[in-house]
Length: 93
Length: 108
Length: 378
Image 1 (cartoon, each protein chain N blue to C red):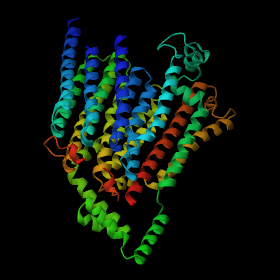
Image 2: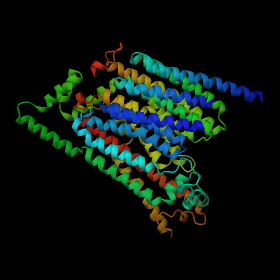
Image 3: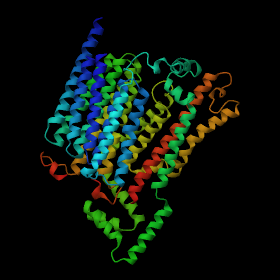
């Protein structure tokens, strides 16, 4: 059953990756990458149960905590520039 | 004996349901026509599928050390994943990502 | 076993596809996001290959901080790659093909995966590290024992490298008050001499993207403008991103707590001072992204931050000096608790990991500050 879960997650990762490659535009890629982060957390958790070592879950836990930092960074630094105004907004797309 | 069998069956069912949701979410992310429907497919199945999968794993985990970590992973995923999806959709709306598909490429 | 091979092969394929996709992208923000994705993939690969310390480092650095720094750097430059003329692609392509061929040729000499009698496995050093470290040092995680104790000098050198980065990047990027005043005076002179004021020109350029009122604000004097803009931006943030604010506020203590766990638990599980410092910095970066740098500066003022950069290095080197004063060699932790070398090793490793954590966290936050501040005051 766990092997099936691993395969399902790998398939889902590949499909999500295709969406991240074709886009179009920033937001579709961001969405795909966000979903991919969750898939990675699940994948690492399944590998952790498969190998029976609790420390593997630390890595999944770390991803669950910080995965959205990069998403938020892109949102804040490209989109909501009012907080950190920059003069070359026109080129920052 | 019967209890362990019961746990195995329950865990298998949860894992199966989680896998189904995860894969269908990925297919939806790939096949749906525009950003907002993709968000819908991606974020909802993400949270539900992750919870089901982690619950299934929790039943198979050996020892409290693994169990505690799995519960924590589940809690944090339930906070971060919908939050990121929500912020993403809101930013896309403010940035003028339009509903109909097709003309995205033209406005690059 | 075959499942392991399947995971390896498919993750490698996905990683390769991601790398190729990154080279095809011209929009650099999106390429940066795909780099984060490659980080996720390689961390999964490290987990499958059982290299947990590497995986946790990749997880912390790859998603937590390097993406943020890339994007902050892209804000200061152009975010679209220039198109290289086709005739200039040949030289680069030739070098890439040559290098790839050399690597493929060299890979023929590598032993098969998981072979038991490779030089790495049979070398006596491996046996020494794996078995005697348990008695010498008494730390379950051999990686921590090697990094912090056996090769303590190397780690000190690496920490000094990070410290140097933390000193130079703010020096290059940060605008001191004096420099900002000089620039203002300079701009004022130019405005008085020339017919068109650079300030208004600047304002209209900005107003094209934002509202007109925003542009007028930009044309105003630099000093007061920042405060007003900050306030208006705060109002926008308050009304728009409520869910994000609440979630970040809830998450922030857990990120910092997890950083402490990684720091103090590094002897037993994956992690250590470096990873803990990166996670700590990621927590602060998240907070400043959501609430603005001003809010973080209220908790952790800039002088304190810069002051913390050398503290870790001093703690590390100071421990070595203390060991010498106690009659041992430099960084010989056995001397810390006379009669109980194992306990001394434990304390020593804990102290230097703390030092590494402090310096890494302070350096990363300082680097992020200097990038973000540079953007804010341009």
